[in-house]
Image 1: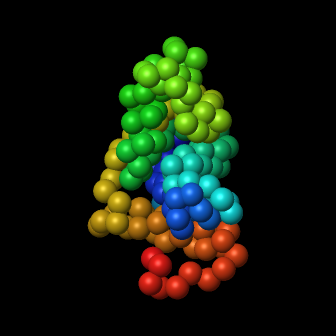
Image 2: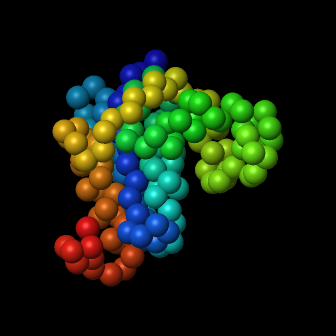
Image 3: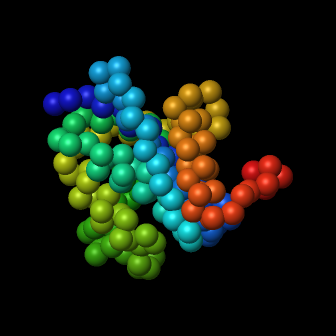
Length: 153
């Protein structure tokens, strides 16, 4: 099984608002950057989309070292998802799980791969995470179809 490092990030200009996602895949010394955006979304949806798109970019099942700065996504998969599934995608309080559509897609995408989750501190000394943040912000700006002033960042 191929070993791949996947680093992801999401960004939103306002929450909700225009959003962007980015992923960096590393395999055998090669690096691939991907990104995209949506006109109206949330930061959590962009964080989830970054993981989904990164995993979908893999052509075959892989051992993935996933480095992510989103506790929401990491904990959602590693701590909460099994319970949500048992309860028919309901929270402990019996409420529908937010972003269920993306959780369902993530569950399916994760089933193809062996994933080791590693939380990294955002906006710190992690070069690939910082680059993903940059790419996600650029994608959010493109999605917004308007320039963002430096004072808004």
